[in-house]
Amino acid sequence: MSEHAWGWPSVVKLSVAVAVIVLVAGCAGDKPPPSSGGQGSQGAGTSTLPASQTEVWRPRVPSVPLTDPLELDQGRLLLPTPEGWTLRRARGYELFCYRGNYPRLLLQVEEDPEFHTLTQENLAQFLTALRVQLGQRAWVEPVRGVQVGRFLGASYAWEAQARGSRLVRFFLITVHEGRRYILELRALEATYRSYRPVALAVAAQAKFVPKGEVPEGESN
Image 1 (spheres, one colour):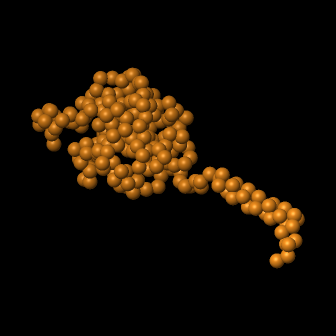
Image 2: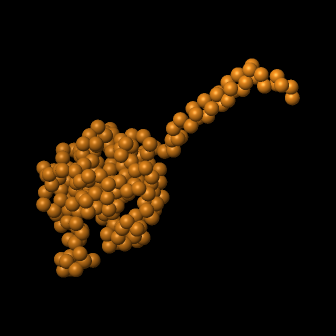
């Protein structure tokens, strides 16, 4: 190699080339990670979602006026209702209360053959099974773990239609002693955010009665 092979013009060209490579690499590193593309990345509630599917959402217990608790599920569950909401009997529901046409707060109870009682240890397994069971929905909030007050379980929400109205159905689910408790808020899409704290406040005050204290003759 001659003594002029690395003269000034060649050094300048090499420096420019290195600078371009560094700049391109730096820009690539600044790009945000690609979106998962799931429906859960859009709509209400995305700013409060956990960072991963195994992380548990722990909202503060909302300050909402509630009534004295009702005895539900043959005395197994004590649950308050929102103050000022109307109670009525509805077939298939342990609880049905509403304010005007919407919002509505409902409680269904069914047997759970797979889980006895939800704990921190089996919650992730329950969430996995629940996601498989529910399949694809018009998610507003995807299935996630939640702990608020005494309540430990799962929450999720999806869009719905009823008589021309756009609704959001928000669910809070737990399992205790082999029974699945499904608390559901149905609200107009425009007011869903205002009423979600009501459902959370009610769930936070849920109290399961120890088996030996369930009224006699109502344990089955």
